[in-house]
Length: 346
Image 1 (cartoon, helix red, strand yellow):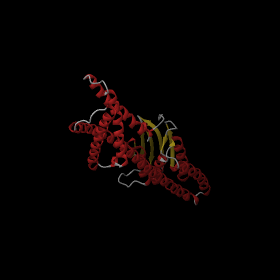
Image 2 (spheres, helix red, strand yellow):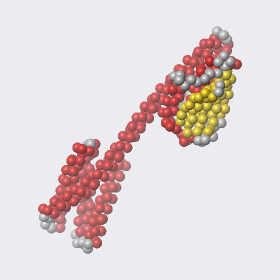
Image 3 (spheres, one colour):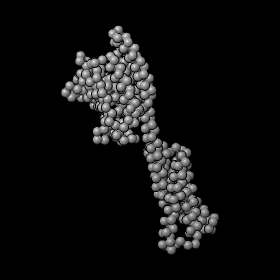
Image 4 (cartoon, helix red, strand yellow):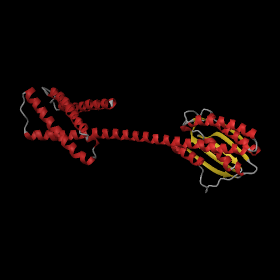
């Protein structure tokens, strides 16, 4: 508010100062800048500032600045005409009282009033345009903040969906072990406890470091290893800066998807190969699994839908998700542009 007021007064003082300076230069060139003319120009400068400030008061007080163009134009024109008549009257009264001059002829009064009306129309156009741009920017910022708030709520909802989804799968794994191998099931519960504690902490964050995500994934894979035993092998290869921050559960979701649709469907099991690396100017999060084929015609599960939506909200066109078949493997990839990170990828 203070900044806008300061800008207004600077423009007022400088703008009308330049206007009166141009009149002074013209008078000087025509050898008319003598006698009382300099004093009259200073009076004009003061009168112009006061009258236009009065116009601004009317525009703001009567809320004309928020009117649409059609009702605004006639009101502003009438205001400009009234202001110019008042200004010319004020100038003439000053000339009579201060300098002992006579009132100017009516035709000259009308001509001067019309001339100042043109200048006031120009002033009004500049002021209203500035006010419109400022209002538009405020609305734009408000919309952006509202959109950001909606996105944050949606992201939180999506993150909250992942925890129970992940928990149910883990509990199913342990349930399958209880009758077969109680001792191993007990160990799995301990692993799950650690896993849940870490995942709940991560679920409160909008961003986590790569190393935090990798540690969570390793805990998850250790849990699944207890269930699948020799049917599951996995490896994790990190080739980037461990402090790079990414949305939580991205890699874990892809790993979970690979086990659910790949390893669990194969009698011989398979491999989960996780790679985090830099490709050109992108961070690549890649999970490859054997044991099954991705069918594009199938409806994507909650994990994939979640991943796509979260990337779209947080990064827009600066990130993406893909999943494809390559020979006997399924490769799921998330890529994020370098310009989305504060630190270098590697």
